Image (cartoon, rainbow, N blue to C red; front, side, top):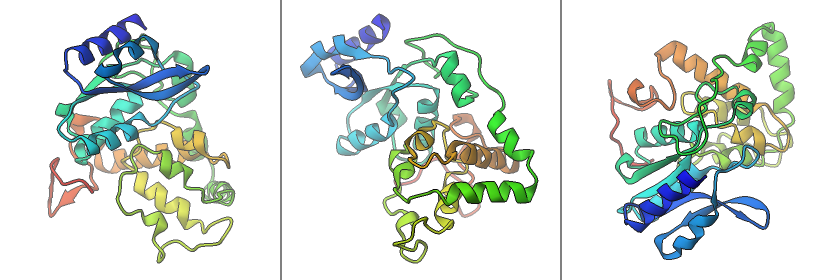
Length: 269
């Protein structure tokens, strides 16, 4: 904790960043907080977010960066958060030159719970590397089902959906200015459960884009196993295109094409 606070304090004090997107403890609750040089004393209250309290900091950073495009900001990241930033760089949503990482390694319990293959960021300022989880048992269980059994299981999950948009709203990778999930020609209104296409459209949209943070599943009031669905989607994209989500050296997303060429430089969507 001391190392993290000292790093943040130094970044702010020396003017290397205009602010730090991290966590603070308020009324016994860990909450997202924007730290600035003008309130430097608040850094003494900066915390490492516990495993039980996670928020889409990448999404909050996008909002701040959009408002102050010339400024550089620091942000607390776990492994999944950094994967998210890497994808946002590729999609032109953030400038990597204007982002400073304050890294936190996940505990083994969190890595096991998430079945995370990369539970630490490239920069570690708090915590220590734990054992990564190479394969998801939850995905393997679905893969082992007969096709009809898997279809019926997913259909049952989708029928629990109440179309609250919680999965979309919490997702750091949902940055489109116009959402297909609200398109009147794609989505019917007034139906509960909604048409199955609601979850299928989102699943297709997340394939090769999901960073496996799990916030969608944790935020779902119907307990739909969205993480399993999106993990499987990422696996398919990796098998088909050799693309690994959130890794910079795998190049641009296969969905991000201009003619026959992929590019890392595009205007924000």
